[in-house]
Length: 215
Image (cartoon, rainbow, N blue to C red; front, top):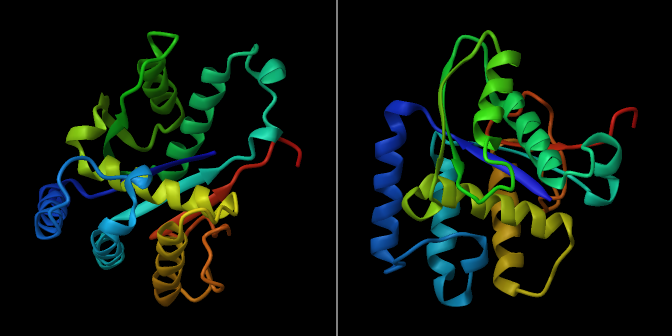
């Protein structure tokens, strides 16, 4: 399982969304995009999305979790949804920086417990006293291209970590992305793969491999 986020400075958000929309128009890629929608007939569009991301000031952070190592009965009273939001919390706390103000937009989903999103903000506020979270708001990915881009990058990391090969265009996407990232920082992604982890201070494409406490 991969949980991740795109980080974009507020004054650049409109510009980045405009660039994505121009790219969609160029390739006639209407509608929502994301990892499930990567296909041979949209290959050129998705390859240009890699360039757009790599050359942009956008940053990406994710945590990779081996679900076989999760023990919801012991730590979450059997509540898998609670376990998911604890991992979401860990990912976000690794992204927040002291002295900065954040607006957090999460992909809307139906939860069994009504207050999941407000609880998430409460505990983020409680933990990150040196960073300000001005809002934490669930939004539909259909109207938020940056969430769609986050989904695309999360999907690529998960595809490589699970060593999947069923789609040639997705294999190629992962390889091209890894090689472009390696050109920015030769310390990581040296073998054209995304199934790695990075140092905590790696900003452009940060992958944290989660481990249970004590391991």
